[in-house]
Image (cartoon, rainbow, N blue to C red; front, side, top):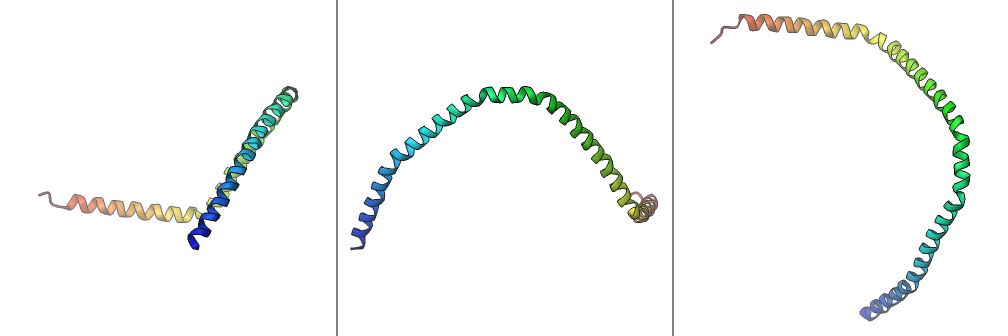
Length: 114
């Protein structure tokens, strides 16, 4: 009984797929045709918009570059201002590193060569 019910379900699903395939193909073909037609219709409007946008785009590009440069300077100033409190710790670390390095060189210079 189980095998029969599985076969019936498989047959029903197969028939549904056979019915759905042509519908899907028509939808895909119709969608592709409509996509191409809409883009062909919109070409003059896009060309006109590009012609108008060249001047505005150049002005906007200059403004964006100036804002980007200003933000870069502000960011560098903030980075420097926020790093100043860490300067004593950096100086202490460099001093310890120099002292250890000098001590290591003294120990290496005293070591007998074998």
